[in-house]
Length: 473
Image (cartoon, rainbow, N blue to C red; front, side):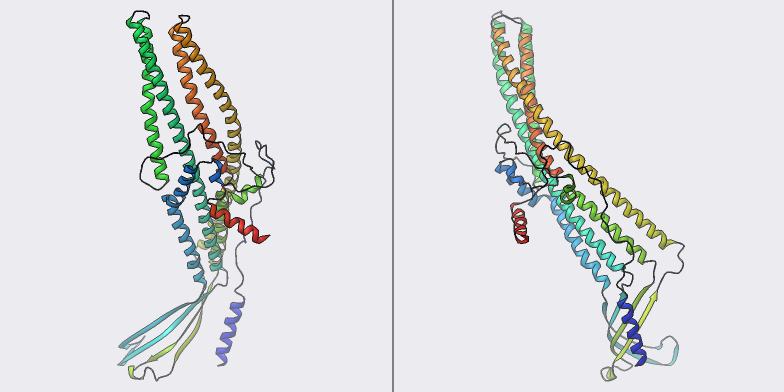
């Protein structure tokens, strides 16, 4: 009895001392951030979550994004990985708890570690408890790593959702752009077809040379060739959108035309330091660093002995008839097992994990730098595309007017048909360029939204966030 008390006292002391955790505790890397973005004219010190479904005032686009977030296969795969990471936290945490197994067996023979003169029977049944005490914090560090992995997967899913929204919107505007260019091509073809018929009639009457007719036919063919080109691009856009929606390739119904699409209001960027709190790729990279930092503690703990306790309480007997009447059988024991000489393997494991953590830290810092670049690029893109769009609009108006005047001059015999052809070409190119720049400017706003880390992904999320803020107040 005295020995049992001593044993229990020693175990209690070991457990009470098992609160330490070897390895470094996580500390967030200190970064030097710019005080403001170079191309941000709105020097606000706060960031509002962007209601992306209201940015462009297009209900069709809102519906497409909602469907994509619910049905996109990449998002669904990532959601499954998040749940796997969540389950892994509980799985890893269980390693620090005792394991209870049930044992039941029967045997007969004349050997039990030594040869006996007579055969005997052996029956036993008992639950067995095995517990490796987390003295060095190996399992607690493993749980830390699993929780960080879960965070990384959750932020990774959000990054994929933000990228998905960006892809849907970009492809949608590209579809509107190609539809606009198709209409320009059809209108140009109809106009040139009518012009060719007039030139044909004049040629038949001998009032114009054949080269004028040939040039008119060339310009008509150029416009005709652009029609199937943009039809093909439209089909590609629709197939891409369908895949983003998690559906088989099919036609896509659009809302307002490209020229009627409203530009969103200015988006407040906030301070550069706020990117660290809202960019999901930055948060995921930091969680990866947290995971690798915790794994250093696991590697360090593996250099020290493990302490295990075992205990069983049940029945054992040489005769089945006396199994329940022969009294209880019990056993309590402890075990210490540690590495003695492994040619530096455990030391190298710690070194390896430290370098892996260092690589994760550097990846985190690189992700932050890339985030700053993304915002700066998006801001300067919006600023310069606005200027470019205005210039393209002026060009389009001037080219259209020049085309009309050239046709009038040609009809009056003041100029050659070459001037008309050049004016037609410039007018067509100007309309196509204006359409492209307008689509690029619309897309640039969603790229800024992505660069800032995205806003609420749904109206429900917005309501939950606002409710949480109300409770805190």
